[in-house]
Length: 117
Length: 309
Image (cartoon, rainbow over all chains, first blue to last red; front, side, top):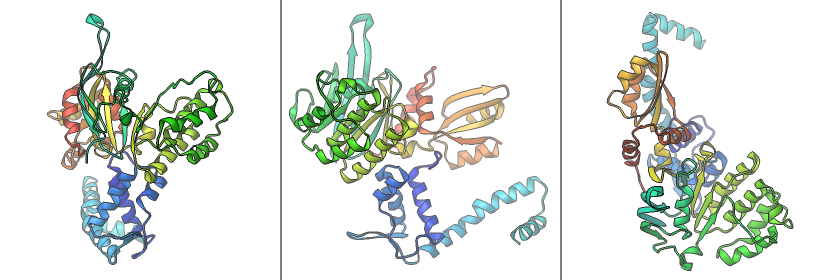
């Protein structure tokens, strides 16, 4: 947990990461808020708020009396969301820094090609 | 939801005339059911006095206190639901640890004997030893055990960790979280070790010189203040017109702790070539309670407006 942002957001992001990276496949049960709270040493209400955020977005759903599960299609939706944000979160600062250093877009593109090889 | 505690215009003065000390000054707040609260502040800030007032161990000079909807003073209906673990609890001279545990059910209706036994084992407390002969850490452990096993609907821990080693403190925090999850209740944790407990707290009340400076959700405070670091001129022009909790400077470099900086504000700071660093809850409390004429009143206004209780 870092100090710069609310913990419930960090919980939600951690669960999203787990879903995107396949550690929490669709239709599997996610840890209960009490399990999350004990494991991460945080207040159960805060953990509940993080889980609730994903329930509101339809990423998780509740099975009465059993617990929270990853919704069908959750991974695809999260990936689509993250692609939308990719330009703003990663590309914009990269291009700005390249511009400061006098690296042209063409040079940048070939640097990326090279680095990804 | 009816609050567990409701306090309005509470004053507590000690002494008279020119020597009067305002231990609690015009405090108003309420605590909701089944949450973990942090009561934070410096030594002598008024934390213990406030808890004594709330548990009927002191009389208020002015103002009203309702605990479970009633005045707690001499009120058995209220007090049987309340557990107050003090920094230095006194016991009769010949009391051994087992006597403390045996007498606990007289005071606490929800006392869980098996849970207490389990905790005695985990904290490695010698049950046959006289309380007088316990070390400072063992005495604290005894308090923690009584506080947890009492399962009182309203439990106060006043600096419960004195002399406890790091392992025992972590054990306390872990057991508190686990037991709170299974048996929700209202817990008030008064502590100096803010970094250690900040993730356990749902809501925070900061008191200084008897006044309540902050009354806000812990998660809302987290990230509500940011350190802005950079060239002094850049920091000064950036902070003009913003709310600054704390400033320091070294040569041409300056740091300012800025409250309530949103995403646009953060982007503007980076644009101006300034570095941003997070401020922990502990640092935030230190900066709000280190008064050198800094604007405590405006801080209060800004940090409490997000209150969701």
